[in-house]
Length: 184
Image 1 (cartoon, rainbow, N blue to C red):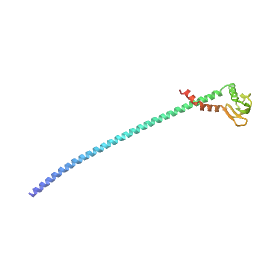
Image 2: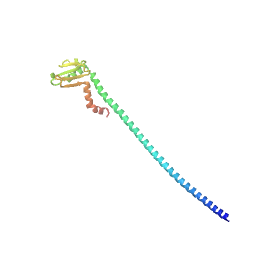
Image 3: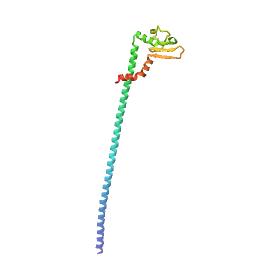
Image 4: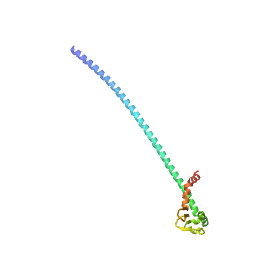
């Protein structure tokens, strides 16, 4: 009987052990499923976060590219406008240089018409010196420009009335007005 009592106890122990193993396996399986779902959820949240960051980066890059393109286009437009304005002044130079000898003579004589003429010397490029022959104190010089450089005899005053200097002064003062006319 002991055998059967021990056998029953062993059978009971085996039965309880099998039941405990089943319970442990079920609990472990539930825990593993719970952990796996948790990791899947974390992975999905991480993936969503990465997708959002990538979308944000793409949006920033897109905005930067558009901004850079706009800046570059504006720079090209501004450069072209600058060239047009410069051309206006260069064309003005050409119009003056292409005037008749009589018209150039009148301009040079007006440039030499200053109060107290006797206190000044008028320097004109050799190319144009013959046009102002009737003005006193005119001297030929290598100024390589149309116009007159006026100097006081005492050397204290110099006035540069050359075409280049006059156009440079006009550019400073009239550039905005020329731009308004050209680019209304």
